[in-house]
Length: 361
Figure 1 (spheres, one colour):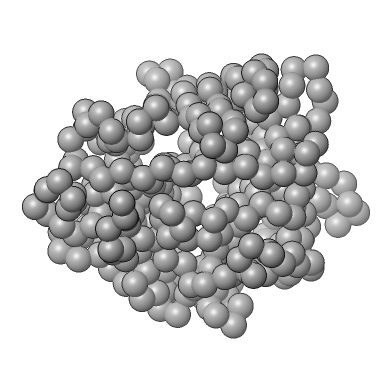
Figure 2: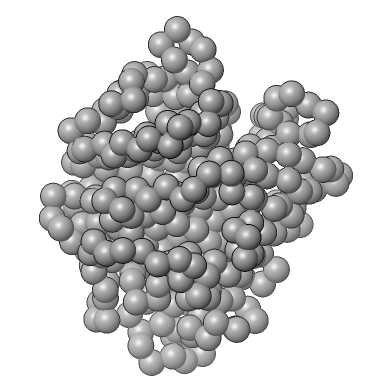
């Protein structure tokens, strides 16, 4: 039975969380501790996206997403129905052969006990779970991800091994999200994760692939007037990594932007807010939610002008049963101006059906 919903994120664009909030500020990140949870901040996520193929195949057959969110409620007196934290999880599988997206979601109240069996997140390292859904980091840096959902009809058991150093977004992991210093997040990326494991979708099969991890935590993520964002994280075939994002208002105007390029030899360039531009080239209309999403973009950054194309238009996730949001998150390709495919990754778009809002049960 669902309780009355409580808005946790973006009650008004850029609204901070109630008492006990911590503000993101430039500091030296410490690992493995900063791979773990930061319960004093309002919102946090561990976001894994990537593609999978059968060992004998030359092209990807699936895209996948597995994300764990933590959101602080502001209720500091734990109780059966009033916990200080909520944990959410989303999983999605894009089947390119069937031209179909499957997705599932989970939600649990968390009293900040790191050993709570129903769901918990460790503050020492990446160890977060909701029931049997889990994401955990081993001493060698390899991430183990697992989920299964009978209703959605798929399961994942994956090992994601780093092939490159961490990428600290923004100023050594401090990523501005607006003109005010408090409009910022701590933001870590791990591009080019080597993926091996098992996919169950109709039948069990061994898979290989490539993935991207984003870990981000904040207390005041968006500037005033923002309704959502557009974001790409692309693993380029030559070993480079490209991130670009913009925060936009209801009229589609960019309020802030940023991103980064790390070349295959490790040179890193962080993009300023005036150096990134997203231009919509083609749109897809959702019959389910009536939201309209750009599914082909021209993205201009200091790394050059590229085209981002969704590999399946219908990659909308309706998560109103958990986080209260509807958003588009899908496997996409990056192309050069001459049409050459340069890499694969994920495109995320929020706030197109309604202003972005995460809610609790």
